[in-house]
Length: 355
Image 1 (cartoon, rainbow, N blue to C red):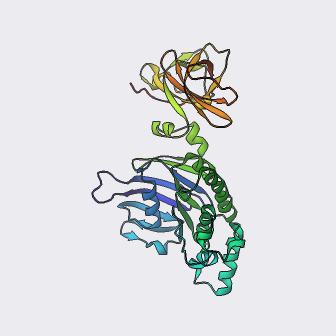
Image 2 (image 1 turned 135 degrees about the vertical axis):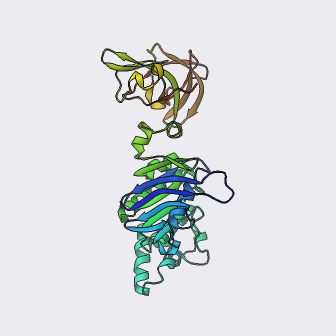
Image 3 (image 1 turned 120 degrees about the vertical axis):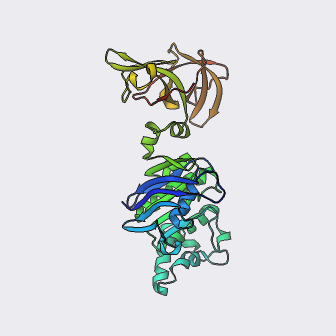
């Protein structure tokens, strides 16, 4: 265990609730963690508490065997050996690219500084721009320089607060993959804050979903998507809806009756006794529902969103339930058209019925 956040709480003066409410998480050496959630959920406040920029009211923060925050203890940010990359890059406009990278390593000899700067210019692919100033670089190049400057002092931990938020979508995706490659090549342990799910999945070994100051789930991307721990996580991650269902006992075990038909003997299905009369809500992701012209179950297209290789259709069943499905983009159906659909899922995720 490298980073250990233990039941940390943080409240701002005059606030009606805690910005961070009893959050606990761990990161192993070399892991990349990502915090995601809606605006105001507490993810940046938690990052600032780990950096030492905010003092938690309760809980402890450890890096390896060293406590940084705890009862009666608050280590200053500059003594934590933590690097930070911010939304606005915070580069020095009057310094060259090389001088920006060298800014945090003045304790090294001149020869060591030159060598370290050269190493990081090579890592971020900007050796040709060493003598330029930040305003002569693109936004993506500036972000690479901010990353190199943060990593040049070889911090124990790197914290990144929505560093790509000002960039266009294509550049964000490319930089997210590049950043993951750089962090893995250098063995850097990092914690990243974003509101962008695609960015989170591209970067994170482990992802935390925050809501109203609480950490709802801290898990692998696969588990978050396929086994959400709470209804909020299920709704927040991916494209999904809930549909009323009933769990009943069939010949081979529990099965689930839904408006789209029976789910026979699915994996990880609770027993009917888990809910009153077996009545529950089932999570249906867009990729659980397949377009099938021969299916007796039909859905009316209410909305369609073109995604390049596919459409995301919002469908209304004859019984009134709304579902989502991904359909290859050459199946270009019209709004108001009824298309055949069927379930294709190997496990179910259920929650108490909301009426």
